[in-house]
Image (cartoon, rainbow, N blue to C red; front, side, top):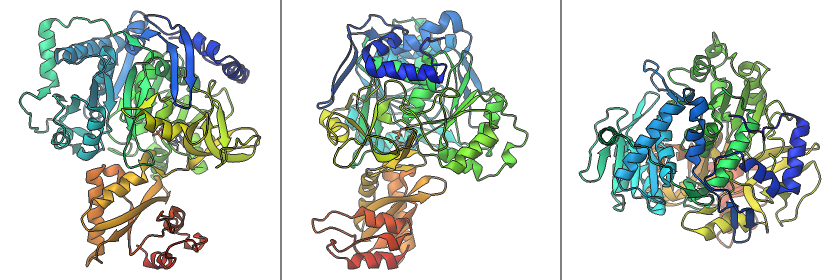
Length: 637
Ligand code: WTA
């Protein structure tokens, strides 16, 4: 599939960027015209950021799955849409052509319809990385149901919170999921979550691991049995539901600075247009390219760059089950060689952990098919960037450092592979349509170059967050109230002498652990649920592999006899309440926390202690009890 909006030179980029700022509606309209619509829009854009209220391609009607599937069948029907690599190397991989994917999605659409799913219903998907996961997502999108994929590492409690927030009556899950040497018991975790979620009517269970599961009569049904029923019915091809541009496509929960995850809502039309535009341009997609994004589909990166944009472009998407280090740390390189991967898109944390194994796992790997490398999710340190460049790209593959967020739907700031300049540890330049602004704490716009500030975006792009599910005010407060007339990203940023952007990390109480966003308040809530805990404060500290580690200061109601076992128990509680990804790396038991007279915890001080720079805590005279700081400094772990 060729889109004429693909930029092919630096000059072309500058021209596209200029037009996107001067005539944004004209610019996006010409791009959107290259997609398949059931009915064209009346008006390109209507917006204001105060409420916020943003609408793109107004009254346009479409179904994204017709763009992902139907449109390609005539020319690409036999070409691979998805290549799937299983966790166990002895199990054969699967290649799913566009024809086959179309067939399977339709089958599952019928399953959903048979079970009473209607447009607008929320369906929670909690599955491992198997091809049935994108099949389920596409089937939801085809019937107009709003999917909410929950990462397989979240706990029962986290799932229950998300199910309740979305009021989801349907769940699609697996009996279990393989991850390295482990079999994660997904269905059993769902069963625990459902103890408090009686509004869930139907749970569809895919048999992946043959793990024994309990199936509740009237509620739980097997994926394969439902498919058999459809086969008996003759698998009718049902037309895709007509969706309005602004109908929600999916909800994806993410951490913020408060204790409760936010359900980020993306639209059908704008998300399709922007995600595909960014994919084609950033990775410089060429027909037949094999694109391997190593993210889990439970995160936005997987939604956009494993599923929707790659399929809208008619590309081949490689997805794998398991871990980069299983069965050994050559896993990603083996997959690259086996499937002749052209584009490899991964996270700095994966690069750092693979770097730690040295060069031996690269012996005998060719990597000659690679053309473009990408990173996402956190700042990449120069050492990792150079290792990636030298040992994986062999100095012949441009590296795109892509900055974006769950809320932005697609890549916002990045070089375009081989087209615009790259600079180690810089995301570099904004994509056309993206207008970054740096502001100071008072909200003044910082002009010029060689300056730092908080990163905002001043004009809407098509895949901007529309609302936080069920609570629009929260969306306003979180993103549109800090700086008037601007979307605030929560990130700090430096603009160098040439106008290139470098993301420096979160400026709010959100941590980035191995590329996963974790709100400190969420971890604190979980710790505080542990028996005997009076209060806690969580901060991040630099971690060689994970980027940031989680450091928790905890006050207990009495000094424990065995501090180590209490700490281990608290870690276990956090794993149970949120999931293993939020488990603190370090816990320090303390007698008090540094607070201002108004009772606010001075995190700056705790951060310095966690960073092992106790000398740099600075002025403590405004504290209610400055002696606490000395106690913490002397306390150690
Ligand atoms: C961080 C992931 C530096 C940033 C797509 C952002 C990055 C958060 C980069 C969003 C990058 C993402 N360089 N930092 N290239 N990409 N981030 O929602 O702090 O899981 O706000 O989306 O990750 O994380 P999220």
